[in-house]
Image (cartoon, rainbow, N blue to C red; front, side, top):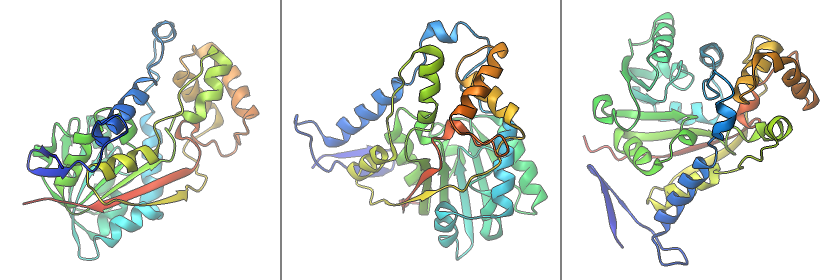
Length: 299
């Protein structure tokens, strides 16, 4: 059995696929190629001036406020259970704090990592409002900033992994940073799968339907990490201030100009989106998976 070393963390290959390649290599190749298939054709992106990949800050802020006010769900419970003895938390891809703010009552120190400094500002203000420890903010991509972020008792990472083509060092760095537990939350399917009917409707473009949470679980197993998981349903939530706001965000995600917002709104209504409770269509419905495993921090 060969071994892979990522800095100070050593993880074993587990088996081989039918072609004689290490199974982990095959799984990583699949994950990387499936994510690459989500690239939007250049002729579509060139027709608009707005990025389809940016979710408005206010959506992250509303989610963080809602979850901090009423913590719930398997991801919160797993992290909270690991903080029965209060300890430190490292939140990777923290956004406005949806994963870490609910943990503040049992958190002795908080480090938040995000590639967007403006999101870290939202988190810092919310942490201050709740009287928790002032968070240490680390701006930059993970795992590039892993050394700066350091270790913590519990490491959380919600709705980030589908943005990570090179997922092995990402997961290895999470594991190396956690003294107790790593808790990852993701949608069961790629979060943009639910937009596929609209891509076909407006662009005649068939979009991918992978990778999935099952692919991530297979990768973790092949890395030698004994991960547990729980599938669950997210309750319907009011992430958008209005149906018009949801239609506008969806329009941008579909690389359509502002004058087509009414068409997008009509398409959303035909898909069954409730105008009184506009739920984010870019999150593949409400089926989520919480994944957790033991950390291997050596410090």
